[in-house]
Amino acid sequence: MKPTRDRGFALLVVLWSLVLITLLTTQILASGRTALTLAGNLRDAAEARASDDGAINEAIFHLLSSGADHWPADGSPHVLGTSDITLTIRINSLAGKINPNLASTALLAALFQACGAEPSQAKQLAISIIAWRSIAISKSDTQALLATYRRANLPYGPPGQPFADLSELADVIGMPPSLLAKGLPHMSLYQSGDPDPTLADPVVRQALGLSGQAGTNSKAYEGNFPVVSIDAQVDGPGKLAVGRNAIVSLAGADAAPPFQVLSLSDDGGATSSDINP
Image (cartoon, rainbow, N blue to C red; front, side):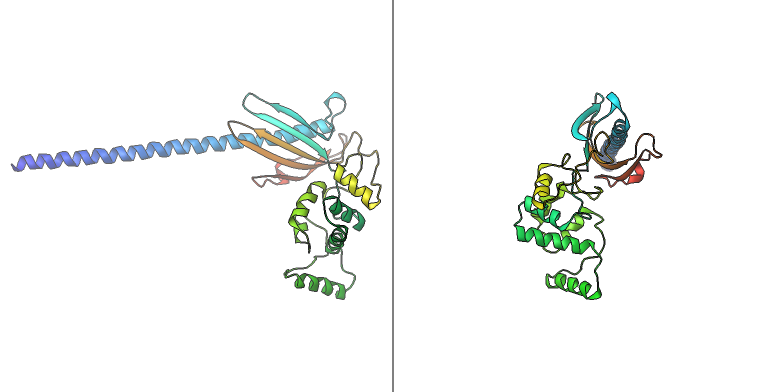
C-alpha cells in the first residue's frame, strides 16, 4: 500500500505545481498586457502633445503670414488633422482685455460692476487691487494696510508689486470668488495698455462706458496682433483629448526673433521652453 500512497502524494504535488505554474503564467501575461496598455497610452499622449506643439507653431506661422495664408486673431476655429487626430486651433487677441496691473480705479470698478457687483463694492475692490499692486507711500500706510488684512483674519498683506498671475486676485481683501470668476475671462496681464473697444467683448465695452474711458481705440491691432492667446485642442488618437494654451508676442515676420512665447500651459505643466522661436 505504501507505493500507492507515495504515487498519490506525488500526483498531488504535480497537480499543485501545475496550478501554481498556471497562476504565475496568468499573472505574467496580465502584467504584460498592462505594460503594453500603459506603453500605448504614453505613446498616444506623446503624439497628442507633439501635435499640440505643432498646432501652436502652425498658428504662429499663419499669424505672421500675409495674404491668403494669414489667420486673423478673431477666435474662429481652424480645424486640421489626420485620419486619427483632429486639431482645433483658436487665436484671440488680448488687446480687448483689461490688465489689472495697469487699469485705473474707475475701470476696475466698472468691470466688477459690469459683472454684477454693487457700485460701492466694486469701487472698494478696485481700491484694494490698486493698493495690492502699488508701493506704499510711507511705513504708516504699509502698517495700516497690514492691519486691515489682519482684521479680516488674513495672515498676509499687499506685497506692493504687480500681480504675477491672475489667480493672485483671489487674495485681495474682500474679493468674492463668484465675482472674480465672472471677471477673470475679461482680464489679461499681457495687455500692454487700455483695452481696444473694437476688440473687446460686451462686458469690457460696458465697463469702458461705465468708467467714462474711451479705451485705446487705435488701429494698431488691425492686421497684426502684438500679443495673442493661442488655444490648441487635440482629439485623438483614440479617445485621448489634450489642450494647450500659448501666449505669444508677435514682432513681425521681418523681426529677429519674429515672435516670443510668453507662456505655455497645459495639464502637464509645460513651460515656455518647450517651444522656441
